[in-house]
Amino acid sequence: MASPPPVPATPAPASQRKQGPGDSIGLYVVQCYGCHKWRAVPTKDEFETIRENLTNDPWFCNKRPDCSCEDPADIEYDSSRIWVIDRPNIPKPPPKTERLAIIRRDLTGVDICYVLPNGKRAKSVGDVQKFLDANPEYKDSLSVENFSFTLPKVAEETVTGGFAWRRNKKAKKQGKINASSTKK
Image 1 (spheres, one colour):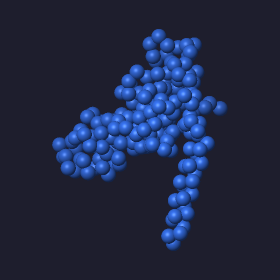
Image 2: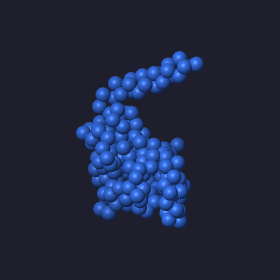
Image 3: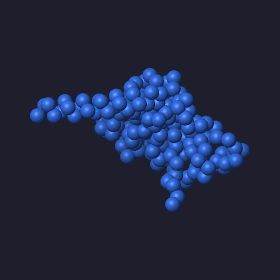
Image 4: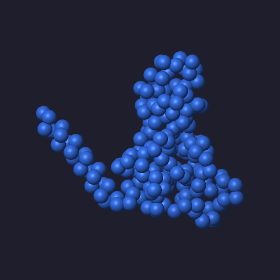
């Protein structure tokens, strides 16, 4: 039985743990469908093109000039950095917008937002719709269907102190359950 196509991953250096004003992603990589080695992608735009078409057009090492499956991996999947695994087939951001992935301070997840043409951030489809309602001149070039707020996954095993991270995440969930059950 064939394994599913590897999804592109976007690792961020372990030192990039604080949520800043921009993207938390330090390096874009993709996994070869043939040899499963990780290859660096030179630009965010190129990564977004690969991600958008990954299911219909799986990525192989030979798609990069002067590269083959025989070459060593560009980067190893390990805990020297926090890895964020994005889903395949997320559309490229529309023109004049940018999709940002921001790792939460507690490292329990990644938030997605889009920088809109007016410089403001949209954190949901509702925010995009409000922008379009307030700026009808963009309705011909932008549509809410062109925005994906699908969250990437933080690879827990790459977070230093991963056990404590899982325990804290579980405790937070349990705290929410306890709080909601006492309100009844």
